[in-house]
Image (cartoon, rainbow, N blue to C red):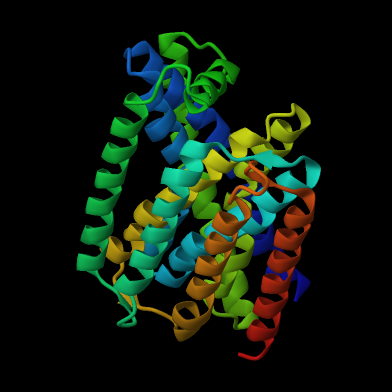
Length: 329
């Protein structure tokens, strides 16, 4: 048993470590390249930083779909959104209370909930088909356009503008050639590490006779959410925890519209009934919980430590549920 699992486990662990490292390299390279091309900082904030944090999920979903493992890709998209809220947001609030900017509360959070519900309604027929993927991609382009337009109309003194500028200032200054090198090397290693993860995860799922979607919801989802978790811990230590909720909302939007579109376009398939009637409703529940926690109380929109504890406990409960579901198969 140990010998049989050794190679898949090594592929999964090494692939995960490389994925986390290469995603940072890719984002730094992409943001610096965009700067050298004189692209607006707000556009970089919306497109590069927002899409960049979901790049691991996109690459994993692409390779899993090409490897005829759409369940892994679907589980990754849904599981990453649950992990981003339950694990990343919960853990961040546990370290330091998170102040929610009014623009995020009024615009991004309701849009995320609406998009999440829309995606669920799209697959209620039990299929994630090619035309579903087309609809998701169109919605992705529309949402990105809306976010760029909305951010351009913000007052330069708006806290959201300051947050975006601050994030860009935190990134290393790279020459044009070095930025391109980071971009290409980061993307190549992302592809290689994602392939290692997918290969190891599929072999482990086959060995234990666990549905691939369960592996996607757990190991792969948590693994691809590690860049967000690392950024959350760093932000909380610097008393900048308020930056994280915007990143999480953006990442979850891209996970639904971009990551979920990948298996729809490359490997249309039937959805596992447990994903349709259990995992996606749980994802909607976590999204709604985040919105409710962000509602102002006594004039302040703050996600408190106690609420962070609740989110982490709910995430642990979700993992326990998946465990019992896997051994019941």
